[in-house]
Image (cartoon, rainbow, N blue to C red):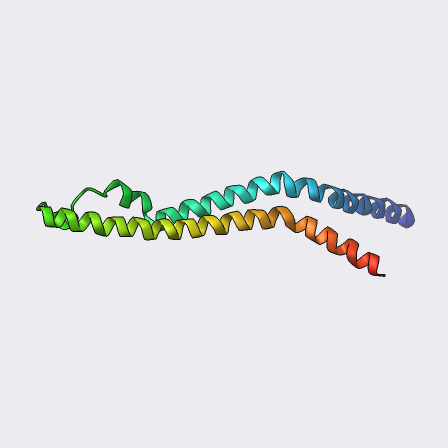
Length: 123
């Protein structure tokens, strides 16, 4: 009885291990990729909210501190243009980081597989 259970459960464990090994690349490039894309979009959305870039763009022609004379309007427009440019550069940096992370996610299994084959060939 003990040997039958041992054989039964060991085959189940081996089949489960084999299935996980075979299913990993499918998960990595389907569900895993969609999960990473969702997380990266949420990250970019949070960065945009932290920078308040759209708020600055929306209020570009609204005078700051309620100064409605032409000097106040001119100064607020100039300041907001600089703020929008700087915040756009920061947002572009975060966009580049996200694109790099997505590229890294896509190429990591290929690189690991190449390195494993390279190391096995060295034996």
